[in-house]
Length: 494
Image (cartoon, rainbow, N blue to C red):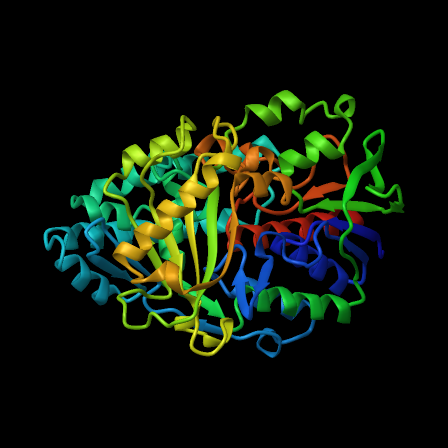
């Protein structure tokens, strides 16, 4: 039986679930606060440059293929993916680098250049990650609505030593300090601290080996545009510049939404791709939230935030040692992570992710120009940092560092620039505490312990996106869309 469904927010979770449900014949309306689709994957068009606002690392492409298949289309007819090799180039504080990809022998040769004794440990590590991957991937598209769902998997989690941190788990096998960093940074891609994130998340390492790291020609924005085209073909009504002020409820039932301009839209089912914490705290009445009370939401641990500078130069930098995806590690690792996640202050040093898409796709910039974005993990707004004062000197320190070490004469060549900080995540993206990835992926906030895909307080209110199960990152948010698609199908049939 076809239902009227409202989706709030157009991040990849919202786009994925709207497409799936429209392809199944439901009437879907999607409401996006900003002037373009994409959520964190917003595209900034500045002076002829295209800057992907958020995710740039595409893994598990089969999750996109599955959505297009449900819609009776071929994903390749809508956007093209090309493999990245290396997946990442990881630099230490002395500018020496480690190339990281999915070729087992290549990785062993890279390890050989740093610590030959760690090759045997890496081989053991990889063998164990397959078991963790198989177990973890079996959980990624299951809903975990009941405590019994969690109880069933506890023996596997204990067997796989999920109580260890990713960094602690990697350190069992790898002795060289820099190599430990190379094989434990992955939780940062989903808002986790490698020193705290459950070792289950080493499955990301195996997932990348299995399916590779890809880039969408035209940038991640090309995927958003492909979703836009597909949604319109499926008859989804898209509302832009449409800010939802309230989810309307009667008892345990969501009945629709009230917009910021007072307009009311009715629905049989409401799905929020907005930040889970923000949705509960701002869109739903506190007296009816018996389970998801303000206290419970505020007690959770939230991810770090991000400071991102998008910049374009009037010269190319192809003669440098930079790759498409670069990770530049500070001399400090554990201390820096503890300061970022401990929310004490803004550290003076930084580790950076430097994205250089024009190496693969010159169309992201005018001819003869280069496009970049540089990202630094920073404390969320739980820290007492005044970003109205801190942003400019922090930006200057990062750009000076890049100019001195990686991009000669950088600042004289910049012809386009945009910057975002934790205040952007809070104000523009409605993220609680300005966290960039919502609820942190620690063991006690994973699976059943995360905010559920179907609200415990309202029977027909569902959640997709980074803050719900299974978590942040493209595979996580696309899997949340798959979970909600399944739950709604069961509820209609049952």
